[in-house]
Amino acid sequence: MSSPLLHRPAAVADESGAVAAHYGEPLPEQRRAAEAAVLVDRSDRDVLVVPGVDRLTWLHSLLSQHLDQLTDGTGTEALVLSPQGHVEHHVVLAELAGTTWGDTEPGRGAELVGWLDRMRFMLRVEPALVTPEWALLSLVGPRGDDVLTAAGLPVPVGPWSVVALDGGGWARRSPAVGDGTAEVVDLLVPRAEIDARAQTLLDAGATLAGVDALAALAVEAHRPRLGTDTDHRTIPNETPWLRTAVHLEKGCYRGQETVARVHNLGRPPRRLVLLHLDGMEEHLPEAGTPLLAGTREVGRVGTVVRHHELGVVGLALVKSSVLERSAAAPVELRVGGSVAVVDPDDLVVTLDDTLVAARERVRAVRSATIGR
Image 1 (cartoon, one colour):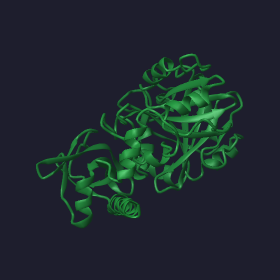
Image 2: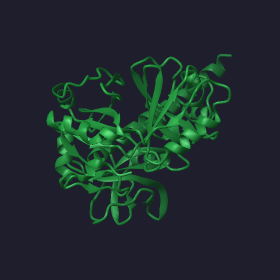
Image 3: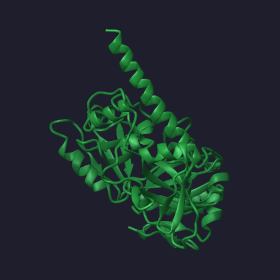
């Protein structure tokens, strides 16, 4: 279903035809998102709801995040993993007034709700897909709180806080994007009121920006999208989701064995990194394009964008062995007809997280063995 905001002046639909990719100014929209406050129409995302007294303990047993004590007025993110530990779903949650809400990638909600429904057994939970009734808008930028205040709306204070909106829905503070200064407040609103709710925020000082602006800042912040920056082999350890969507000390859940084993070894098969491309190609590489070192495939490219400051950049899953070699001596990579370079900060992280951590664990095991 297409959004009414696609009828706004200069709107250019994204590939799905559901929301605007931009409103005629792709790069200025990014800059306003990084420096001021923009409203991004994300009504293409699927929305689900889980009421019922057993919902939190039930979700805790199924998902990767610690949820059985999720307090009212808070949110988080979580994963559904396969028995082999591969990421099947990524969902962003909001707990409010006895109900757990979730939003996920467009087109993924029905499959997720269907799986949850099959896992109900005799528990008192009622998972349902409510995308036809509810939609997500996102206020992005360091001045977003000023817009909420001017609009007379409550401001969620602190990481992952959730507050109710008059007339239904909620506002949830999500992790910042870009260089960390572009705050994100997601607003769940009745789908029938998208246009009216958006106009309230625009009258309060926000400007419209398409999903491409948010995508560019998300790439800069290393925030992956399921199915675009991941494939069927992706495990949480290869992505920042290991820190943000996985609780490493909670009890058993599907796929936990893989997560724990790879974490303890300290070396996932691949890592999600930021690539800088030379921009020589007119068309940006599509998600899934192979990343080559010489003639050898060493990874896959995900989201690639034209960033207002960084130029052409993208996220890519790259073999850990290649990153370790690159940290010692540059390895020339190619994607399509472009030369690609891994961001130097990601190579430092690779050295620290992979090599140093693994060596420390080996030393600890040897010390414990010798001391017996």
